[in-house]
Amino acid sequence: MEAGRAVDPQKLEPFMGKMVGDMGAALSGSLVITGVKLGLYKTLAEMGPARPHELAERAGISTRYAREWLSAQAASGFVDYDEAAGTFAMNPEQTMALADEDSPVYVAPAFEVIACAYIDEPKVTRAFQTGEGVGWHEHHECLFRGTERFFRPGYRAHLVASWLPALDGAMEKLEAGAKVADIGCGCGASTIIMAQAFPNSRFVGFDYHDASIERAREAAREAGDPANLRFEIAKAKEAPGEGYDLVACFDCLHDMGDPVGAARHIRSMLRPDGLFMLVEPFANDRLADNLNPVGRMYYSASTMVCTPGSLAQEVGLALGAQAGEARLAEVLTEAGFRRIRRAAETPFNLVIEARP
Ligand SMILES: C[S@@+](CC[C@H](N)C(=O)[O-])C[C@H]1O[C@@H](n2cnc3c(N)ncnc32)[C@H](O)[C@@H]1O
Image 1: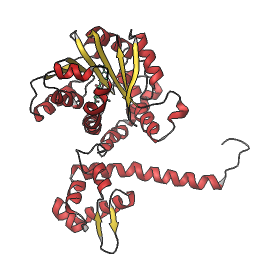
Image 2: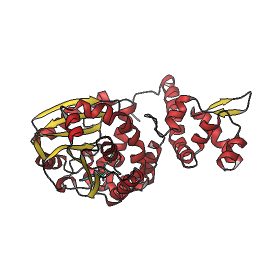
Image 3: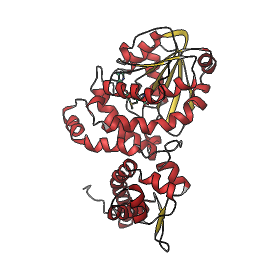
Image 4: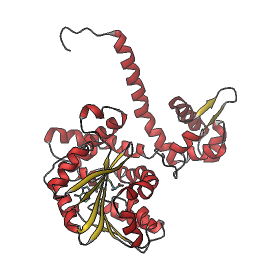
């Protein structure tokens, strides 16, 4: 303990209150995963106010578990409780966040990503000591599907409606017929959305992680197998082809060991009038300006996944998920891009346009 500084009980009490809140949040994430897996939120949202045994019957689970789960959900504020009626119900906002996969704020799958941080914590803790990395592919599989499910609603809400229109001339090219690559596409959520929106254009998604590409192909089949879409295994710096009108990286440049090398390669894939759309987690340039709930989430994910992922690859620049626009612009400039600007933003994402 720091000498000479007495503990201030006035400060300790609210701080303990915050810690208890965080402990509850950290524990309740696992209950969200259970709720999603067993369709409990969806079932309750469809039913309206229900008693535990009614939810249990409809969802096909044990009543005792239903009562305990519902009590925890009410304490979390994830469902409403009516003491007089003895019922639990989901209001429209809770339904959007936890039950409706098509809502733009369906955040329930975030807890699958968070689960991976706990499951893989021993690997990352060891890496702190050795300085080595932990590759994206070395994580538990809940990271891959969790990321797909967590990011998809945001892409569905913003990608075609606002991010692509914010890029200079992109919509005209995409509507007329453009050649597009989505590099570091993961399970392909963004690639599939674009391919469905622009049937005259051709899309290819690349990722180095074979299991993600396998899942992307399966997701494409689930989406009706668009003829203008394919997925290939490739590292960013080795993605084949040239003459692209648009190359995009969604939330992955900072995961790469050599983002400068990757961006330089992307530049070489583009036509002279081509566009690089770089989507990265929202961040301000100064650490002090990121000390907020979004920054907390991203720095934590960055510590457990993104930074170890980059350190596991060649160069190991480890940009981190909170690099910020100025640092990203440096990377793009070093890679040879000349015209760089922020095209759009949301509370969670920065969208940067870069031209050769
Ligand atoms: C956070 S995920 C984002 C996935 C996807 N773009 C999305 O938005 O859902 C990061 C992705 O970057 C991929 N990745 C990391 N390093 C890579 C590299 N050097 N080349 C290609 N892909 C890479 C990972 O395999 C992972 O799928």
